[in-house]
Image (tube, rainbow, N blue to C red; front, top):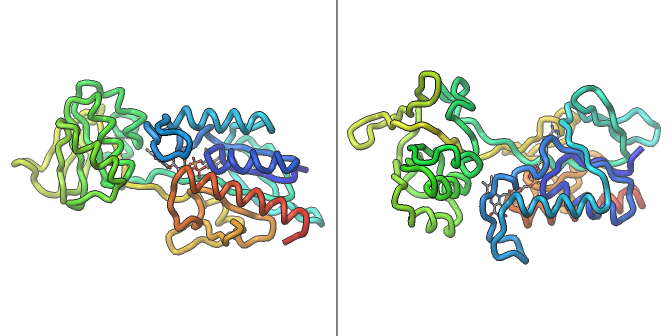
Length: 307
Ligand SMILES: Cc1cc2nc3c(=O)[nH]c(=O)nc-3n(C[C@H](O)[C@H](O)[C@H](O)COP(=O)(O)OP(=O)(O)OC[C@H]3O[C@@H](n4cnc5c(N)ncnc54)[C@H](O)[C@@H]3O)c2cc1C
């Protein structure tokens, strides 16, 4: 029986594990993908201590730090439940059926990219449609692509894609961007970005692979943009399905509801990072790390005092 089970190999999970292991708690940390969302951040300029660092490099350092104290397991969790022991505890079921038990639990499962839900999206997923411009733009060197969205990921994605693509259409339903001003400025410097504002994509077109997108209103005389790649960057949804299933409460936007100690409503269950309602839902490396530290401290206190 472990003292603590941590689900998530991202910034929040790694930080929590560093703290719980240093509290000398028997720690089990697991995640489907090492590094989580941090792996998709091309350039991070607000992680204190690094003027500029690539997301994957930052996550590699987190992993190395966590590994200096504890092992980690790369695997998907399919079920989380209360264990039957008299003294409580929790059980994780890994894909494949293996189970692991622990006295406390930290959900640090981050978020999943939101779908656009238009015809052609599922059909051409992986055939020109992807959900990470910064990860996949490299495959579209010298070609025309569309980035859909207007937040941080879309704006950063368009700026990065414009470094390799011939032309980047940035399709956004509003006429202004809700992204970090740094990335809006970077994007505006790129002359090969074409702003397609106050337009929605209503269909993704293709044959064997993507050939274009259909808009709800004409742009420069046509309702169709001819592109080879479509990057859907319309936000993320917290990965709360397993937490909800075991009885944790969500807030009105679907985030795992936590208090100031990162307690998630069920004694012994905590949350950290993008999955939670904490830090005013400001989903950043700094807040995910902070929440991971608080959750670990709360686990330690809970195991000492039961509160
Ligand atoms: C393109 C982009 C650029 C960004 N740039 C910045 C930036 O410059 N500065 C900044 O501060 N923030 C930035 N962010 C935000 C930052 O990446 C996140 O806030 C942070 O990575 C969240 O960490 P997390 O640990 O909460 O979640 P995640 O990193 O998403 O980790 C979640 C973990 O849970 C695992 N998981 C989920 N479901 C399961 C399951 N069923 N079974 C097992 N494991 C599971 C995942 O595999 C993953 O390991 C950016 C985000 C994006 C998308």
